[in-house]
Structure formats: C-alpha cells, structure tokens
Image (cartoon, rainbow, N blue to C red; front, side, top):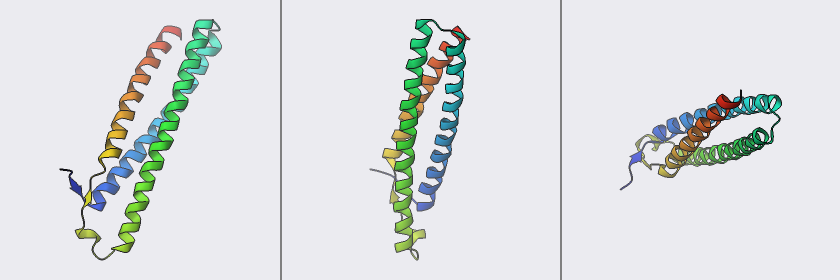
Length: 127
C-alpha cells in the first residue's frame, strides 16, 4: 500500500529535488571544464577517446536532469491545480506518494555518483 502525504510534504520534496538537480547541473559544468583541461594537455588518442566518452556521458546526464526537472515541475503544476480547485479543503487532503519520482531521483543520483567516481579516476590518471 502506498503512503499518503500532504500537499505540503510533496511540495517540499519537489523543492529539495529541484535544488539537487540544479547542483548536479552545476557540477556537470565543472566536470566538463576538467575534461577540457585534460584533453588540451594530453593529445594522445587514448585520452581524446576517453574525453569524448566522458563528454557524451555528461550530455546524457544533462538530458536526464532536464527530463527529471520537467517531470517534477509537471507534478508541481498538477498539485497547484488541485490546490486551486480545492483551496478550502487542501489542508485536509492527502495525496498518493510520488514514488515514481523518488525512484527516478535515486537512480539518477546513483548513476551520477558512479560517473563522478569514474571521472575522478580518469582525471587523477591524466592531470
């Protein structure tokens, strides 16, 4: 059975997730700069190939951030509409927990951490 939450609890989770996603997006920029530094200093085919690999992974992660952000904002709009329609009773209403979003964020964070660890290994070898 799925847990129920208030609109305020769901909204707070949305805010937390959106802030995390902004942080990850900033971190992608830093990662990209580090990859560029290494690629400029090391022109070997191995390094260039690895730099391309990491650049592609960063693009994929950015796309995932955009998708997750869109999904969360869409759910927030849904909650806003419900709050407007039921403004008198919204404090007493419970909503089904947004388990799908929570799972998506958890998966993203694990993949992001794995990528970050892999990139750190690459950078430590070639910087």
